[in-house]
Amino acid sequence: MSINKVILVGNLTQPPEIKPTSKGGVVALLNLATNESWTDKQTGEKQERSEYHRVTCFNKVAEIVQKLSLGTGSQLYVEGQLTHRDYLDKSGVKKYVTEVKLSGFGSTIQVLSAKNPEPQNNSSAYEKNPEPQNNSSAYEHLDVAPQKIPPVELDKEFEDDIPF
Image (cartoon, rainbow, N blue to C red; front, side, top):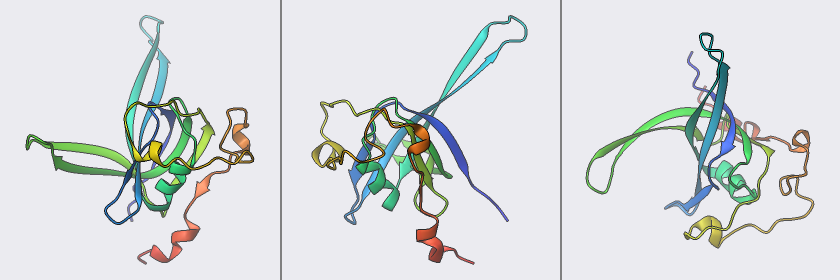
């Protein structure tokens, strides 16, 4: 038995980037920062370090992210799988990427505190097709208490995909 599960709680460093797929769906790209702080035992000084994580959301998870009103600073809880891939950049140099993949079974995304997205100058599918917001949405305003924001869990929807 093997398990590949990543759980992160962090803040978006920029609004989600939504890109169309060749099959008519969408992919959501998130940049999430996590912070660690400690006191140095030798100097007694407080230390802090940030780690940056690329989170890639596919299928239903990406559609959900597209509907959320998330901006820089939004705090998220995500569960997914750690993946590694490589690609050739424009100059033909091989690049390596480690990312957290959210694509269905075992994937969860929960908004702990939302920040409304800032207007952006660059064009993206996120800007061109924003979903209309309903005032009763639990995800819309900053004044929604985090405990009232339900997690988006996709396990039940993908039970048939279990290979055993």
